[in-house]
Amino acid sequence: MRLQVLSDLHLETESFDPAPAPGAEALVLAGDVDSTWAGLERFAGWPVPVIYVAGNHEFDGRDVEQVWAALRARCRTLGITMLERQSLVLTGADGRRIRFVATIRWSDFDLFGEARRDRVMRAARYFVDVMRSTRHGALFDAAAVREESLACRRWLKDELARPAEGAWDATVAITHYGPSLRSADPRYGGQPGTASFCNADDDLLPLADLWIHGHLHCRHDYRVEHPGGGSTRVVSNARGHTHKGETDGYDGAFMVEV
Ligand SMILES: [Fe+2]
Ligand SMILES: [Fe+2]
Image (cartoon, rainbow, N blue to C red; front, top):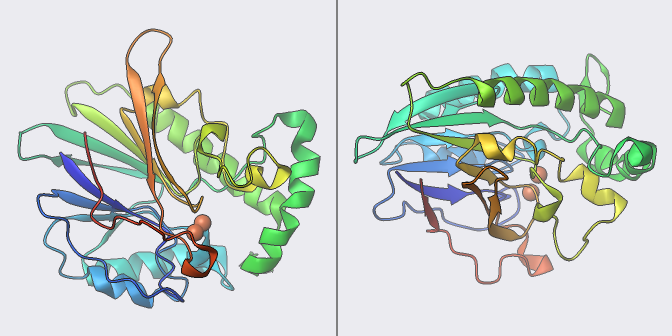
């Protein structure tokens, strides 16, 4: 199945016209499409199924619990399939059934291990302040982000480990946050703030054939070899912000085959 991949379009400020890639059988939107949600309308009437996973910016200034229901309702009216801690099986033109396993994932701040968790959670305060989100009426702070993140991780681990029993031929994981330090933005590398962007989900990578993510405003396409043979392809086609030079050379028709 050929998948067009887009994320981090940030249409709340960026001018970008998403267009269907010729030959794509589905479109994967890996979050941060538009913090105002208005830009989601661009994907109504898209010629192939649109699978959307929310990004952190879709929560900006909102209450986390309220966002899930409202965003899901908005997507439903637009004909977009929003997935959160949900999976979906689509059949490709070649008859192969592809399972999509999706969650925003947030960040659990354990990217550099438990010993550095406090340090990276202090570094996360900047992002929490920018987001200005609440949960149960209180600031959606780093501790609350970690709590949500761990719930996402538990679901993701169980779902990825679920045996196919003939129900699908390949698995695509979709998370907004990066699944490995290998997805770090080379501009920032392994600094504490990177734990607000990537999780140490390396142990889960072998359970997926392809892992699509966004959040880091750089592009990735790399393979992780498994100890027992085989490999997982990790892809991000994040666009980012023009004023930071992140959109230079962006290919909005980028496709990956699974
Ligand atoms: Fe983003
Ligand atoms: Fe993001």
